[in-house]
Amino acid sequence: MSSRRTFTMPARREVLQRLATVSPSQHHAQYLHSQVANYSSTDLTAEGVVTMLTSEIEAYCTRFQSGAMAVTLTMLVPGYIKALVRDQRVQSEALRIFAQVDTKA
Image 1 (spheres, rainbow, N blue to C red):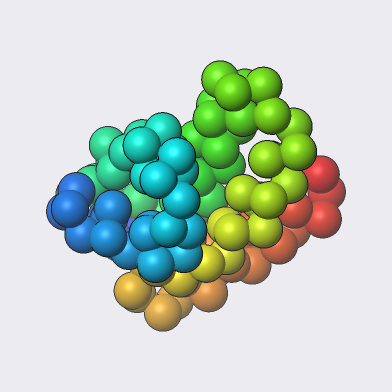
Image 2 (image 1 turned 135 degrees about the vertical axis):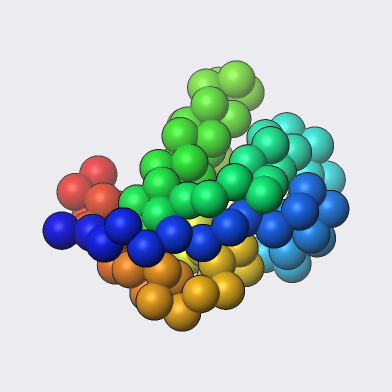
């Protein structure tokens, strides 16, 4: 069971900068990272950040009809979590939750 501990997403510009350190792709920046940045300054739980990232990746892959890209982007999720979540307890929990979700997929 996940805790209710939250963290606040960084400001929009910082979200974009942090995500670019994980994937410098301009296409990702324009179509995926910009969607994730819509959550800037939002309070999220570990489960919330995992849900947000996986749903935005799903939307991106659906939009561009790229199932193969889903595999690549899913591999980037741990890096995205580490880049966005600076609270170590929330980060660890998010990584644990993602690992459980990823192995079920």
